Length: 199
Image (cartoon, rainbow, N blue to C red; front, side, top):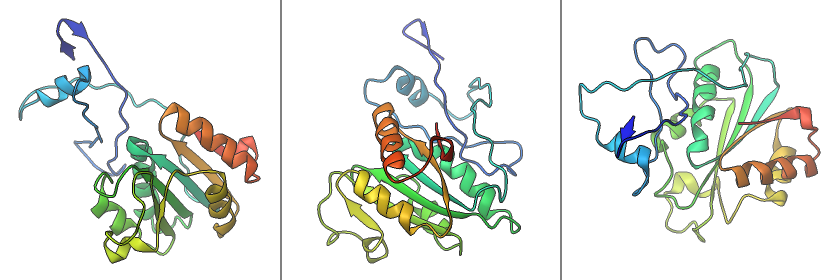
């Protein structure tokens, strides 16, 4: 798009099911002073936006991994959503999933309804890590047992890896800092470098 005479572009990951026809959905976080955010917020029904792709280096294959450990921060949840769709839409796919969603606050969690629906599948566990909350007292009951407080760090990553039902392959997506930190945590938890993928 063009904002203030500047041509801008950003990479977004579709969150739609691969079986969706004729459309795709994306998760876009708008920032108050962001150039792309200004462009996105100017869209109206009937406007045309130009998209290209897909891009990316991770191709999910059903039943290739015994368990996926997904570590996502903020909009880093997006690639995990499309992979979750692939697994839960396919009755033949028996991959276990442990998804860890990191957000600042409970109110800031994206796609709550979708995540609650996915957590009902026999092979999906979803946890939340809230960095700016300190107590489960204000959370709905359905979130209390699966929510951690503070930042996702080495101790919790080790615990999550240990709780996996099968040897996990980890997927990590978030800020550059989050991704680097999680790579270190996964190595310390005993995963080899070829046992995780960094988006």
